[in-house]
Image 1 (cartoon, protein in one colour):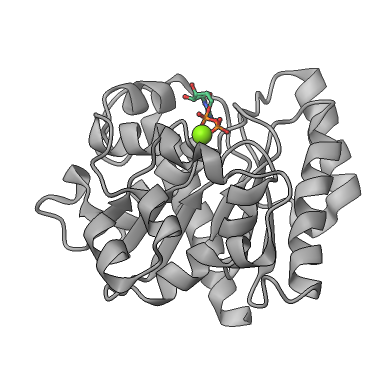
Image 2 (tube, rainbow, N blue to C red):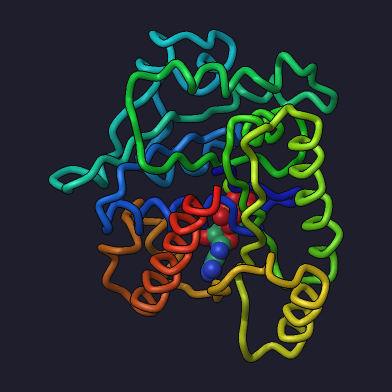
Length: 260
Ligand SMILES: Nc1ncnc2c1ncn2[C@@H]1O[C@H](COP(=O)(O)OP(=O)(O)O)[C@@H](O)[C@H]1O
Ligand SMILES: [Mg+2]
């Protein structure tokens, strides 16, 4: 599943890490692929920058040997019943984020992932804040896409473009397995009248594509990220509500497999 949006700072990485934490907690074997050249999910999962080879090598040389070597275990999963692995990212993937990628380029991540030896229940791809080459590569490799959005004025057009791109790529046969799962609204402040209004607007426009639960803005999320620990082991303020929300979101994601 690709976690994407046209915009930065809306919570793609936070949703990826929240889902990874829920998956680990529930015994779901998971691989995270950090396709954003900023490498935030790599930093959030390892507490330090990634090793090489990373996703840039995987994409430029889509072979079993490269992809298997790029996959590393995440310290979060030490002693856990299930695996949480990572293909790290770095700014070396910047060059692959072409605004007009060829079809061959777009298919490279899928080609590489099809050759991996490890099997997972869930693969999460954290995308950069654009709909260029890297995000298109992620979508072409995905069965599902999740668009992350804030409850704001500019969110509507951004979400619309991300959802349309996924349907176009499916229709053109570039992403044959892709089904857009929907929109996750993140950083919601229930007491903000503006947020209430924007959430209602998103529901009006996108209907059932607006997924439950809506994720609220909570300081516990930033604290867990700052400590590079999974939300589900973080004990601070507002942690419990967040873990419940990501558990529910993971359930929505996993349930959608039955409808494919
Ligand atoms: N639900 C939330 N509550 C509090 N802070 C959040 C929430 N979601 C995201 N953030 C914070 O907002 C910033 C941007 O989020 P991030 O996940 O990095 O966005 P993106 O990956 O889309 O650029 C980060 O500092 C993150 O900790
Ligand atoms: Mg990010």
